[in-house]
Length: 395
Ligand code: FAD
Image 1 (cartoon, rainbow, N blue to C red):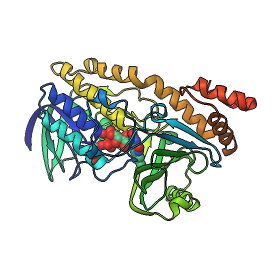
Image 2: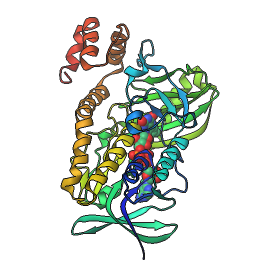
Image 3: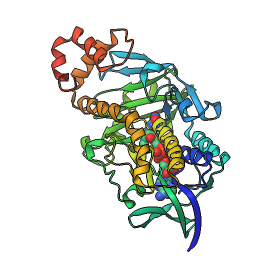
Image 4: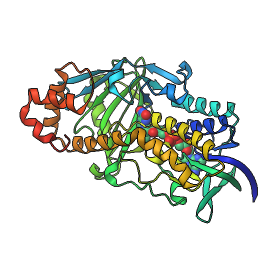
């Protein structure tokens, strides 16, 4: 078997992997970025919504080439659609600000990695990790059909939701059914939507999740939904939910789908462990998706950056102990929010349409200055004092 030597090998050229490779190479480490597909960024498996506020931290400058639409805010609809909460982009959180063109965005991030000196291999899936004395020492890669050995001091697993690298390395990131949301989306053209807003629909139209409409420009949008796996009874049901939603809305009904996207997101808390001897997990492979919105692009980029930087700090001592600095950074940044949002997600999934109608009605009537459990529940208490009991456990 042919052998290659690198300081760092990154598995997966999504946003997390390319950013990890970029910062690892920037710090002078010999870095290899592996991608199993023939082209980075396709097929897109994403609704492409992001907020603006994290890009600076990840070192990404907004650029028209990878941004399809700029969004003013979010509209959140009650199940009966009689009440709407309108939020500015700043208040709306993770997914509101830009709608990306992921095909270009992912390529752009890979380009930044290449400019810092990372090598990129396409059509090169990692098929196993190399382990010595239980320490990860590289990966076996099927490079254009031929198995080769890549020795590396540190492996960064950025292989997405279906991550196998973590499992091969002995790190458990298994998900329970309640923490998986199954998604389907159509890229629709010839529709009539308010393109300045991203639109979210709650309730039984998407049990345990929501329906989204993310505008991609005039008369064009990603229209999709996610449903908790535990709420689905049979295969194909997610598509029926989406088709039913579209059929019910005149402004969508006249449209046509030019692309179908399927996939899944995790909605769990951060796993017990995301590093080991010689290995770090980033992005979806580390389950860093917001449990309530299902947004993961921003966290993938930022965790990728942290991993690339910590790789440089630990390259002469790539032990679990040293790499734990990365895990601590991730936990300090997101753990509290993930726990809070996980509980909120569990609660939302239990609410009836009737309760959600009241909830959205109460919140839509106040002018929100900030989004906090306190401010939201105060609004509910004023309008429907009896309803507050439902949220006692959340408080
Ligand atoms: P990925 O983007 O999944 O990249 C992983 C890469 O690894 C892929 O290119 C894959 O081909 C490659 N790979 C896998 N295995 C191997 C291997 N063995 N060897 C080599 N390469 C490998 N997030 C948002 O922020 N906003 C949204 O609007 C949004 N909408 C979504 C809608 C849907 C339907 C879905 C499914 C997800 C959505 N997400 C959204 C989540 C978002 O797509 C992910 O969080 C994000 O892509 C994570 O980036 P990543 O780099 O960790 O993983």
